[in-house]
Length: 194
Image (tube, rainbow, N blue to C red; front, side, top):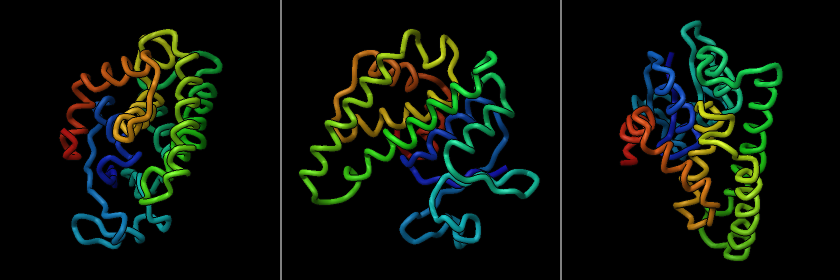
């Protein structure tokens, strides 16, 4: 299988999850502006959406969208899933919130100008991180075991640090705990982030 990613993009979550799983996979960077892979391939032939992640399975099928890719990884590597009768549903619930609310709220931060929009985004993001922190009772989102949802949240916490968005102490601790994990260090090193 092959992961197409862009350094520091949300695809870092998938990269980390695959490393955590001990999966055998290839990886290739994508220039999102030029829509070109590191090997010179037109990325739009991999994913017509033109953004990462894209995970090409051994069968040749391509998965896109962070929630779908992370859900697939959790289904293939149950150690990264959430146990219990509502485990998958709860995991999808958190992944959806991270994607549709937190991730989306960062949009103004990635573009020049728009100081009023950025200030509003900072306020919104701080409240969203507070909501997540209110539900965090253990080391990770669903207990003492890391799940794919923690991988996605970690990337959002890295973005928060980059843009000086305050997060509760429990999420700072989660970011530190995740950052110390060997698989996280490998993925971040691969992406040139450390």
